[in-house]
Amino acid sequence: MAKRVPKSLKDGKTTSFKSLFNALRFIPRFFKEIWNVNKKLFLLSAFCRLIGALLPVIILWIGKEIIDEIILQTSLENSYYTKLWTYVSIEFGLVILSDLISRAISLTDGILGDQYNIATSVTIIKKTNQINISLLEDSEFYDKLERARTQTTGRVDLMSNILGQLQSVISISTLVAGLIFFDPYLIILLLLSIIPSFINEIYFSQQQYSLARSWTSERRELDYLRFIGANDKTVKEVKLFSLTDFIVNRFKNLSLEYFHLNKKLAIKRSSLGFLFNVLGSLSYYAAYVFIIYRVLSGVISLGELTFLSGSFNRLMKNLQDFFSRFTRISQSALFLQDYFEFIDIKIDEKAKEDVPLPKEIKHGFEFKNVRFSYPESDQEILKGINFTLKAGEKMAFVGQNGAGKTTLTKLLLRFYEPTSGEVLLDGININRFNKAEYQTFFGVIFQDFFRYEFTVKENIAVGNINEIENQLKIEDAANLSLANDVVSELKDGYNQQLGKRFLNGQELSGGQWQKVALARAYMKDANVIILDEPTSALDAKAESEVFGRFIGLTENKTSIIISHRFSTVRQADRILVLEHGKVIEIGSHQQLMQNNGLYSQLFSLQAEGYK
Ligand SMILES: Nc1ncnc2c1ncn2[C@@H]1O[C@H](COP(=O)(O)OP(=O)(O)OP(=O)(O)O)[C@@H](O)[C@H]1O
Image (cartoon, rainbow, N blue to C red; front, side, top):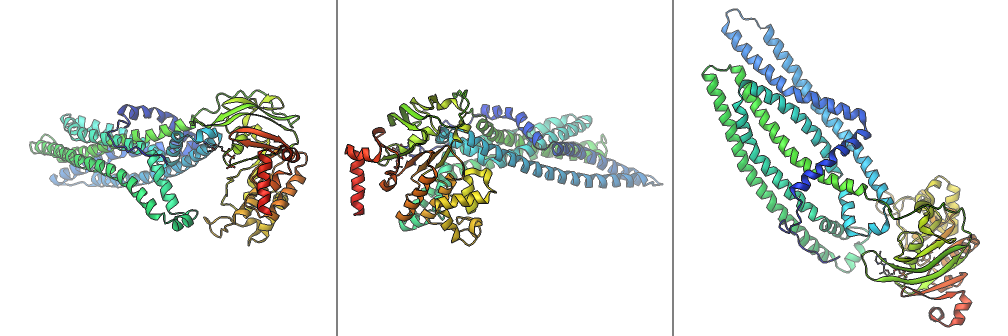
């Protein structure tokens, strides 16, 4: 982990008000997405909110009529209560309707939110798959991905808040209209009561978001520390090396720093918030006294008093909600910006994919003066590579750790582009083929293959997921990689859950996992098979058997094997020896042994070890 530069709110990296408001421009696009997710439900939610917005003022009005009616009837000699009971029944009906509407709103919001959540998660997974691997290794990009991935609840809240805001606007307008109708001066008191706390809210929420955003990579580090500190995969080493204190201290130091900054902000926000609220209550009571005074002087009725004080109270609450929701909206809109910026990342602008992919390889691949450095690294890993891999040839890559063997295959697979030089397939630069189609040419098992915590069957089928229901093919693949031996020992056979994360999961040994992963390479009828140290964890007998089967099966197939085991390597048609990013030898086992170069030295060294 790189050394971290501590951040505070004063480090100039805070998000400005301008960017906060700027983020609001994504809202129409956001609603278009929600609309596309479920049009009917969206309309229903909007309709409920419209009704919900009009109800408060109607209920207050009916309340006023009830009180005025009571006063009127008590002053009459012959009382007549039908009108009064009608008003009471209407108010009762409206209160029930109001409850129904608010429940309907939270229900529709919940369902819409869940559906939108699913849709965005799917978009993020698909987008991540389209993005160039080199970009995935960029830490700034990783932060963006992290924010897009983790802030789904922020986006769902945003929807409720915006719809709630529209509802508030209608409610506020009707209440203000009522207030203006009776006493326009009350509006001034109302504004006085609300504006200071609004400024307080908006200022602090912007500060809080800035803090959270500038700490994205530290929060990622905290997650990572939590992961290595409490995880079945790392527990052995953590215990054995007594790493718990080291991890705990690192976690504590980092999280306490964040906690203190956050605490400082929260305390400031609450204290100022309290002061401004006192100001709000003062204005409310000033308005109340003003209204009572007008009742006492006979200008307005008692019913109107209840209506006005009720309206004022509600308006104050609605405006408070409106403003605090406004800050929440602009804050979550920043999360929205992260999401849209992520899904808008342009994919492979440079590629001119203008040549159709051949059905099969005629001549082979050629590396021409290929040089390569990893993005954001000055170190040149491949330094002018020239060689051909002929159609149908079995080639082995040999060399010491870090020589560049895996990197060579990554360029062949177009995970990265050469810094200079080119890779050709039958004389055509591989960049000119559609990348996704081109990659289907290959069946690859990487050195760091992934151990999916799925069933055995699914673990094998990931090599060609379209064939997941083809049990015969899965079993054939398992036979070739010796995974069938592993399966026969498992309680649930091919349906055995692997790993320890889920119920009834069974962990495998390193070699057993490798056999299962190797079966993936046989699942598709690939033109080229690449095996990067496929047998490193297998015992000698299993390795020789696996490799024998591989040779037999791939007789006419182009293949690359990366291995440190010379018993495997020697069976290849040709062997390419890499040292410090350069090809220093290439030829058959016999030729290289006669050369007496690095290959023959390494071979003899290993043979010595077996004597
Ligand atoms: N994603 C990456 N970003 C930056 N440097 C990398 C990356 N992957 C590998 N390297 C560097 O590239 C060099 C070559 O790595 P590569 O994995 O190709 O070696 P290799 O010959 O396959 O080694 P091994 O036998 O240990 O698997 C190493 O120095 C490594 O540190």
